[in-house]
Amino acid sequence: MRTLLKHAVAIGLAILFASGGVALAESGDIAKVGTAGTLFLNIPIGARGVGIGNAFSAISNDETSMFWNPAGLVYATNSRVMVEHIQWLADINYSIVAGSHSFNDSWALGAFAASLNSGEIERTTVMQPEGTGQYFEVTDFLAGVSAATRLTDKFSFGANLKVVSEDLDGSVATNWVVDVGTMYDTKWKTVMLSMNIRNFGPEVQLGGGYYDYDNGQRSASQTDYLPYQYPMTFKMGLSAIPYNQGPHVLQIAADLEHPNDNLERINLGAEYGFNKMFYLRGGYTFNHDTLGLSAGVGAEWKGFGIDYAVSDYYILDYVHRFSVHFRF
Image (cartoon, rainbow, N blue to C red; front, side):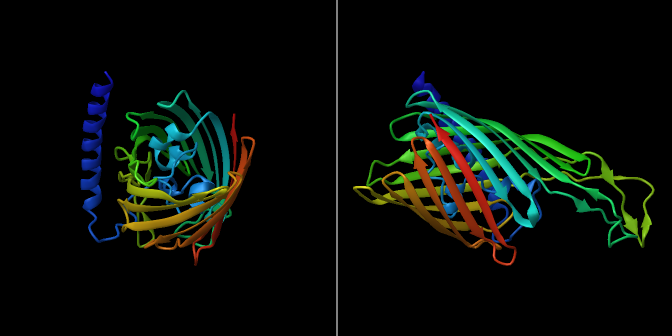
């Protein structure tokens, strides 16, 4: 039965990664910015992973694995709960809660929910471009379940099933997407390899429609919104522990990231741990429109931990995030 399961997983992964690779390869060297929607799904979750420069796919070993590489959830021991708040750009608030439970060395399950709110935005029209005095809000919601299994002592597989909803001033779009990931422990000098696809799903279309304008004159009837793709991303990762002596542990990682609406990026990062209690993190993202340097700190004591990360988006601003987690 276990051999049959491994073959089924291998076939499914081959089909998924092949179809995902074809879709991503279509972009070539052209940055197809603006061709995907529901872009809040691109906001990274997990202060630890962000502090390592978003190079977390092959490190994933805690409850935040669900947001980076669900295959890593099998390395998240015990039961865990995480709460995070992100002060995103333009005073947008993003809040997340997640929990996971490890049944044994081979199986783990998790669940998560996240909500983003834009705050009040002043409404403008063609005739009143400076504002009408009325306000509206944009809200996004994400919820999902995660499962991971260790198929061999080297290979683990995980997947998320997510429901995504976006409300743009009353025009709502709701659909499902999946994340699929793998991790491979080479058993050679602590090297770990990973591969995953995030936000793989059908096209989605906002409900309702809009009125077009021609020389300031509004059309007589509404036009339906066009369907759009989710921001699908393919990642390959590598991590290693080059130094592990006494209370000192240094872990390094790299991710190659290929989104369907932009150019390839490279994420590099490192985490230094002292006595499994205090952590310093840093990393850099190459070939991103605005993101560059990221850094963070963390502390853990008797199952309680807190993490902080800051990311420099250059001309936009710094983004700060805090997360608190419990392990019991």
